[in-house]
Image (cartoon, rainbow, N blue to C red; front, side):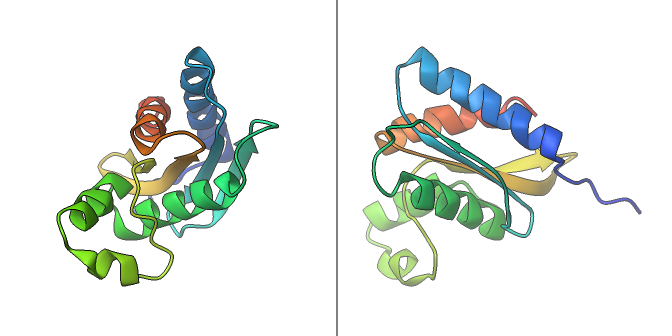
Length: 131
């Protein structure tokens, strides 16, 4: 059985769609794409993105790939009082990380950081929709 994979071309297409959404809104962000193991496959950032955005985008992507859930799920859990999410290693409980799926299988994830978390989420959704 051939397992679907996230190629570098896929990662660039996802990042380009995310970048287009960010640029359309004049938002400066970091964009990270990881494979299904959470390993960085592609990264780009605006030249004057906020400090820490590269690391945060990568962590959001890693979390979404590892847990197979959008980071918004963890953000909502923390906001509702389930603070255990804060103790998980490498977890960024803020919207902006989404799993990337092919044929219903998680093949990687996309992480965005640099603006408000709901805006990061909007950009991530646009990128994920490019697959």
